[in-house]
Length: 225
Length: 80
Image 1 (cartoon, chains in turn blue, orange):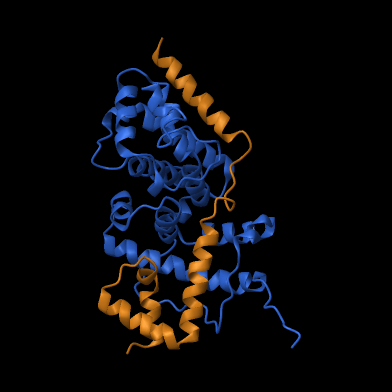
Image 2: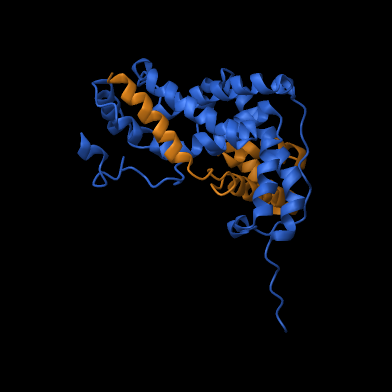
């Protein structure tokens, strides 16, 4: 079993801390299933390796939910502890990552309820069209701009200030890369609602961020002739 | 032909490649001659890539060590 998790097996090799691994690129399901079986059979320490690929995304999701690193870290720890304690109840029909995200979502929601009861219903599931920021042209803003702290804050604030019902869907789709139906399952809403909320979340971000990010695009080169 | 407002309604599904082939063709045709809708689509795509970047939400120092130490405590408690 150790070989399954060793660096010789790149499908589930322990990754360096902080490596981003979207849920859609999560380890091979068969390998993961074998590791889970081994943990349940008593090789409990393998749990460390099982969850390593998900450390970053679960924290990012909790952070975007709760807007506070201490709460996010508590929620992340509770999520993984609950996953360990309830691993026997995991059914392989769902991806392990989807199951994990459902636990994280419940933990984050409980934490929100404890801290700020106000935020629970901060937007209705509106169906009116939402108008994006109108632009005549867009020059690609390269990811190098993220080296700047103020740009990271700009993006962080835009995501964390989305109304909760839009933020949830956005995080599941863009951070955890769950499918529409997996997101619907995790949130206990219909796939159609996931699509509507996702659309609104994306347009809200475009409206807010396009004017702020636009000046960061590289200038067009001016030729002397 | 569809107008700009209809294209905006389809933007998210267009990005997810979740439109029917007929609607997708209509949107694509509109984008070919509408610089406003093209810029909206490009900016949205660009913004989604930037917001999902791992640098936006950085892990606190020592996060992973604390997490695994807590898990290890739990695992050890099973053996006693």
